[in-house]
Length: 502
Image 1 (cartoon, helix red, strand yellow):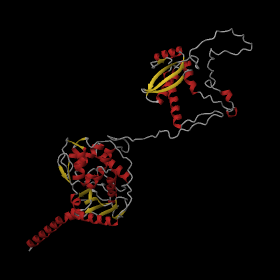
Image 2 (tube, helix red, strand yellow):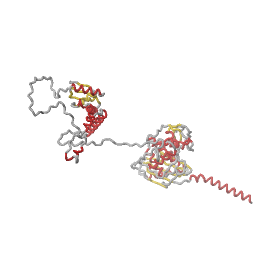
Image 3 (cartoon, helix red, strand yellow):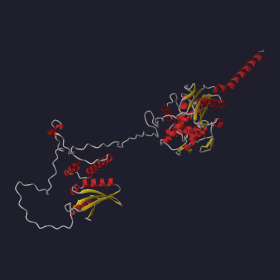
Image 4 (cartoon, helix red, strand yellow):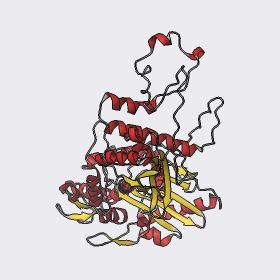
């Protein structure tokens, strides 16, 4: 009898063990269920259940890994053709995997394909290390990007999505990420609809091909599975002008999950309006490879663009009683800039002698008379030496008027001339360059006049357009003045050519 009881007890023990083994897969797959359905055009929620419950995202994580990779390529941090050296950490990741080996070199584009289509864990880790230098640094960047996208209840700890404490997300956040993938990186979105692709080493099949093949209009996005998460899927489909994005967490099998997603898709298409204005989500603030305290390897600086174009160049009011020709605002701005640049150039090039400094500063002195009533109190007592600069010396050719009657000049024989002159015999000119535009020619004349103010003070500036360009000329010079000016300019390595009377 005792022997019989022992056999019965042993049989019951085996039966219990068998039940536990049989129930183990069901318990592993009995993850919490959550779902979300939105109209992708507007972002409007059409259905939700447990959408804000934090759950294990599994390989839905790779959606963020790929989003960051697309962002890094867009901002020039890395290229799709960058050759990545596989680390031991990436090569050691468990399946699903591409089969990468430590030290192997492979282009980033193939790692992206493997992560998007096959959901390869080794490829995802290799992407993260290539962009941020380490998986931990890449996870921090994933979290910054998630925050910028508005994924408020998501926290990543790795690039592949294998179960790790604290690595959690929600159906709402993953739906948000799926919408941003579609609108923010449309050039790469076709990856998610490929049934198979070549990943550098071999061709790989899409883990979502069953749903893509069975549901009309489906074109993505990403599957995910772990024992803790169950069967997850973020799917997108388009019919006509309508696009629906559906997320399911915690499916019990691939077939039941796909069936549930198809059911929710149909619900979304029924509830979504036929016509709706597309309101794309706002692009997130660029996260970059910047940690909380110090930049990490590959950090990209922030680009700041300053708008410095002149929007308005008002014309000053004319002086009282002075008649002026109207000058266009753009002409005034160009002339002002030319004068300022020319003065600065001449000031830097001229020798620092008292006479040269006085000549360089002379054009900048404002000679507008100031009314006595407008002067500040005590202004006469506080004039600076610059404001009291002596006037230029009187030219020797000026004859002062005498109070005594001048003697009657002796008779002079009449002078016979062969041509009329209104310039005192100054029929010579000099050419200082042939430029490509009137503006450049006028600028050259202005700079030359400031450099050689002694000999060109009385010359007139003239721009002549000819077939070979715009000629910058000083006219109304005597032969002596023209020869002297050219000698002095040539000594300063400035081109000059004397032009005789024609």
